[in-house]
Length: 161
Image (cartoon, rainbow, N blue to C red; front, side):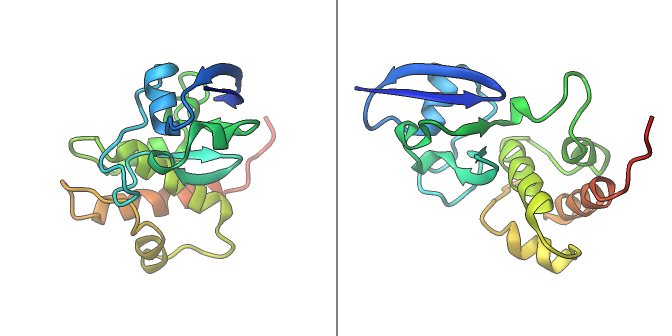
């Protein structure tokens, strides 16, 4: 058993976990954050993407102990109260989901892509950068459209209120 301490969605968390517990299972089973989905256990599908210290990570192949001391953000921590994150809002407005199983991982990966990409995102870049996230329902067109819309929204200068 290992003791892990981390910040999850802005709140400090400490628990004893099995040495081989994956971060995805820690989030889902120990903390009850079931928005992180598990689709493959082999980093193939991207349903389990969360942010660890601001970077997209496939949590199905990261041990919970490896996140010790880190800041973890899940889909549940992305919105600000009732206000959806711009990527969540764009997925809704652009109809970028069907069954929704891949959606949390897509949104987390897209958020990190938008926040870290240095340059203007194009359809080709989004398709290339998101290739590690699989959707079995859609043709990706609306997903790409949503990511580009969110990128435009997130890069707009905000006026002071």
